[in-house]
Structures are given as C-alpha cells and as structure tokens.
Image (cartoon, rainbow, N blue to C red; front, side):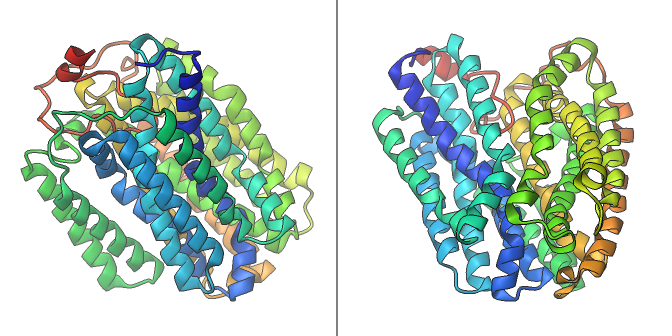
Amino acid sequence: MIAWGTPRARAVLATTILGSGMAMLDGTIVNVALPRIGAEFSASVTDLQWILNGYLLALASLILIAGSLGDRFGRRRVYVAGVIWFGLASLLCGAAWNVPVLVAARVLQGVGAALLTPGALAILQSSFNREDRSRAIGAWSGLSGVATAIGPLVGGLLVQAWSWRLAFLVNLPVAAACVFLALRFVPESKDDEAGHPNYLSALVGALGLALLTGGLVEQSSVFAVAGVVAMIAFGLVQRRSAEPLVPPRLFANRTFLLANVLTFLVYAALGGVMVLLVLQLQISLGYSPTASGLASVPLTIVMLLASSTSGRLAQRYGPRVQLVAGPIFIGLGMLLLRNTVPGSSYLTGVLPGVLVFAVGLAAVVAPVTATVLASAPDHHAGVASGVNNAVARTGSLLATAVLPAAVGLVGDDYANPSVMTAGWQMALVLCAVAAIVGGLLAFGVDNRVLAAAPEQDEAPHPGECLHCGVEGPPTHIRSGEKARQ
C-alpha cells in the first residue's frame, strides 16, 4: 500500500488525473470545435449530432462492464489499455478526412474512455493506505474536475490557434505521459473473488442504446422501436441474471429511483443547452471559438467555489431543498439565456443566465451524487455510482439526439443565424421544463438519507462490480480484500 505524500503517491495520483482528466476534457472540448468541423466538412445537424453522440453512446453503454473488467483482469492493465486506445482513437479523430471517419473515431474514443474512467478510482482505492484514500480521491476529484471545467476555453484556444484537429491531437502527449507513469509507478491489483463480466447484458444494453439513438437522430421509427425493445430485453436479462450489471432491487428504493430520474432530466437539459450555446454564440452572435469558450468561464468559477459547500450543506440539513431548488434555478437560468440573441451584449444577454444556471448546477450536482450513493446498500455503493454516471451520460446522449429535430434544426439550418436563434430559444424552453420537472420530483426524496446508514439487504452476489463508480468512491472492501490487508 502507498502512503500519502510519498513520491510514488504523487506519481499514482498524477497518472489517474492525466487519464481521467483527458477523457473528461474531451467530453467538453469538442463542443467548441463543432462549428469549424461543420464548416470544413459541410456537415449537417445530423452529422454534428453523431460526432457528439458516437462518443457518448460508447461511453454510456460500456462504463458499467468496464469496471468489472478491471476488477477481474487487473485495474492497471485495463486502465492502461483504455488510455492507449483513447490516444490512438484521438489520432484518428485528428486525421479524419470526412464525417463518417470522424464519427467512427469518436465511437472508438468512447470505448477507450469507458475502459479508463472507472479505473482511475479503482486504482486509488486499491493502491493507497486506507487512511489516505479519502484524501487521494478528493485530490483526484478536484483536479480532474478542473479539466472538465476548462474544456470550452482550452477548446477555443486550440481551434483558433490552428485547427479543430488540434483539439484531438493534444491528447497524444497526455496519453503517452500517462502510460509511462502507470507502467512505472502504479501497482497492479485485481479482485480474486470477481465473477465473470456479464457480457450479454452489456451487449444487449449497448445495442438498445445504439438503436434508440439512431432512431432519434435519423428520425427512424423502426430503429427507435427496435431500441425500445432491446432496452426492455436488457431489463429482462438483468432480472434473470445471477450476476446482473445493475441489480434491479436497487430501484425498489424510491429515493434511489427519484435521484436517478432527476439526474437524467438535469443532464439531458445540460447536455442539450451546452451544445447549442456554443453554436448560438459562434453562428448567430459572431463569437470566435476562444470567446465562446470564455463565455462559460463564470459557470466554471461558480462550480469550483460552491460545489464543496453545497455538499456540506446537504450533509448537514438533508439534500431535499437543494435537489428541488437546484434544478429550478437551472431552468430559470435557461429561460434567461433566451436573451442570447444577435445584437445582445455579453453582460445583458449571456452572463445573467449563465450565473443563475451555475448556481442551480452547483446546488444539485454534489447532493444528487451523495443521495444516490447513500440510498443504496453499502455493498452496492460502487455499482450505484456507476449507474448514476451512466444515467447522466445517457441523458446527455438522448438530448443531443432528439433536441435539434424537435426545435426545427435539420440539414444545415444551424448555419442560418435566424433559424439557429429560433431553434435555440425553443430548445431552452424544453430544457428548462425538463430541469424543473426533475426538481419537482425531488420532493419525494427522503431528506434523512445522508444522515443515516442505508439498510443492509442480502449479501452481494459473487462477482458484482464494486468499483465501477465514477462520481464517488466505493465505501467498502470485500472480505477477501480485508484479509489481504
């Protein structure tokens, strides 16, 4: 085990921050590059949707099983494989010569991100001394979160400095440094009691999401219906499996269910607005890529300053008030952003909405994650966190798939400022309604959930993934691991 403050501890921490930060950064940096990509390839709205959704689809579909692969075959091994995969896919993205190649490369990027993302926390959990784990995970969470926060700004600078391709190629040196540090400093670990990964569940779930997303993006009822059928089949497979990816009994807890529905609605609203905001600023208001990235900096600042306080308040007074008020503020901020139209200034048209939006987001993000974890039995903490992360990614995925067509942005309409503005304003109303509905549902959350330990139901099934969470660390260790320590 590694002690905090040692050179090896710093190297292990740097390894996990570089890898997961690279994946988090890529989730936001591409948004700023979309207008330039669209211009170079004469891309339609559907093309841009697939460039975003290819990545999200692979990540959302595979993140749960990726955690169990690390437990069974070695966490460092799977993490390094994910980093290398992500780097090579980024190279293909940067070299893409048309939209189909770029979409395929983005899907491959998502596979790499799914392999490396849950591995970061699993490595910290298994490498550091028990008394140092919270400190290590806290440092990882804060520094990795900065990568997500600065994504739009970094994306704007890279795109404006040379080309949108640089937004992908920048991952190559980061991936190389991460692999070097991992192979030299990170100890290998795995769970000797881990069962076989549930490949059938992962395949059926991925197929369902792919068909449903394809049906929404391409407006094909056949694909959409097939996707719904596949997702129903996924649920049936989970109920009948001895080693399900997602234990169905988790959703018997009302607070767990409501917190995940809230997560889906809020992240769907967030994903839809953040993509269209960049397009609106660059196309309708004439912002440069760098300026459009700077426009969201207040959101970053508020999140960094207020998120930890938000978590402490929820722990002390219960999460319900923040889970209700946060999404409502997000919705109000979105409605204020309707003033982001041609001719408006940043101070009056953009900043007020961004600030109200940011306050709501800071109020809800930490409490909803804590609520999901606290409402699950202790031995399901890892999978509960993984479910919540997958739900958030799926919300963003489906919103990006359905929103443009729902507001009349088809073909190359997004390149027309007047059409783009009309679609933008309508999209804000739809997203605001989704966020506010999520807040109203939170009235049903148990306000005592963070104050009391969750009920312990039956013992976990052998082989269940306990380290596939992304938003928070597992709060337990298997009995076999305790003996080895």
